[in-house]
Image (cartoon, rainbow, N blue to C red):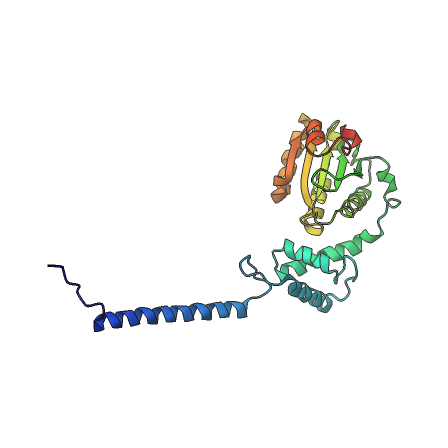
Length: 274
């Protein structure tokens, strides 16, 4: 004899059980819908996730209005408080947090104004530019990035004015970024360490360079190559590495041959690395 079920599929007990399940499902769906509705209603520009992206144009407008309202004395125009490209860039850097983006943007725009970035020119930095200690290469690397080359053996912190060094640094970063092709966002920095000696060591300037990229040119540094580092550079590297923090992952120690073969074509390699 076939075993009997404890209750019939159509028994009152089963019907009540099915109704309870349906009721539970309905209640759960309503709770989910209600929760989702609350999320949408409470979704703010300071809380962003990849699953619930907020339209960036709305956030850009919000930041523009906030900067105009709270910081009306900041300059407008290119690289100013109403520069939508700049606002969007800092917004992405701060993971779409309006408050964080405004804070970092305000400092960056104020710094540009105080430093006189827009007034920098080859003429204004000619005293150090002429030494060949740093330059922007005429060609892009094989990844399509502008290239800033620093010749460490020509840097003499005891003899060269720190303020002039900073001006040259910012001028060359601006020049490199002006060469960014459409769709490219980062630059390559090559630090040529051939001939480096302790008289060329300058921890303070390296710290300044790191701060400039982090605070004022975020996410513009694609990679940093330390080329043919001599043994004497090791102590300096141990001091600098902790300052780099997340930028440390962008550093690569390599040879001149690596630069020549992996980053350029025969036609585009810098003369110093041919």
